[in-house]
Length: 450
Image (tube, rainbow, N blue to C red; front, side):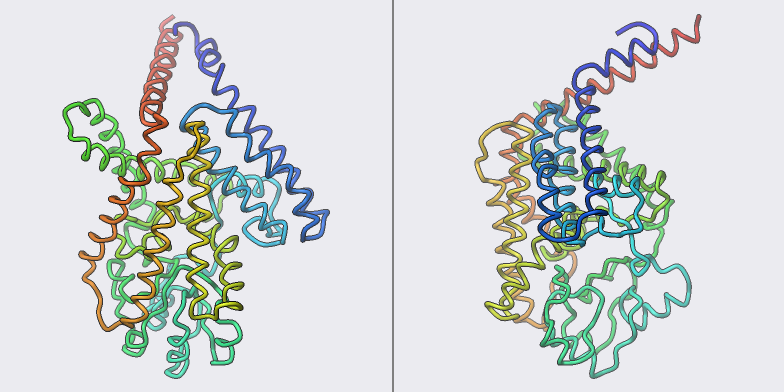
């Protein structure tokens, strides 16, 4: 495409980009309607009914986009995350329920995969908090536990966030007050004190908190270097595909694993960076080095695509956990809660894959997540039985965890992704982006050379 800058941009905007812009303008208008409705209508079913037209519209709207990247991200951001946030808002819960949010912040939080980091979740920034961390074994502003409280806390034997019960009565009356995918430390580990010494060992206590130890990797400079390296690796992977005819198919599938992780991480980091710059807010991270996971619990609950984990906890896991506790008792309640969470995640992935391929689902994706739900329940039960008496070395745990995720991904996840030719279409879009920048560069050079 030759011509001036205006003609080049007009040429490239026509078609898919134009449809994408129109779709997102309608999304913004719909979210503003939900913002006003939440201010006028009381929480409950009446507010939920007022949101239903928007929810159904958000399920339909990705079908108006054909691009793999634009359609996939719109389906993920809007049809899944935004709809779940609106369901929570209907009952005055979730990240959108903060009455102090301006309409601009509300729109950003609703439409983008971001979550404002609360004060109690901010990283430790001074020596006093560092001292408190070594005393309390976690980064939250919670009081130190005395010996009896530690024992009572260990009896809880279920997923904890940060608020610890202070008495046996509180444990019995509300045993599943958090419902997070985090395991509590074993009694032996609690009574022996912290075994957390640095960022590399912070998961060894079995109490996976949201706030990592401050380090160079978590600083702005460290994150810039981290994403610079990931962007370089992503570019190299794209280049490697040019030689796919000379590479074994199994190796290509392994490369797909890194491709998906890097593309998701980079896209979410860009979105988070833009939101942080425009809103001036501290946002929670989206990924936490999933390739270092030591267990399925660690991988799904604390490292992989954390925005999904944060939205599934209050919408699926906690309600099912509470219901199951009344029926099965608190000992067995996490089993159906975990299975329900993974089942919903599988169905939402099936929906996004339908947006990408517009083909009848084969349900392989759902089976992938159900399999991981079963294995996670087995892992949780095994940890309860072992009760801290035995622990795999970190390197062995990481190899087993990542190996299991990749093997089951090869078996059940990637076939559906490849059947819709998402890889071929994605490469065509990369080439189109390259051609766009070439046309813009050529138009700029011709403008200034006159």
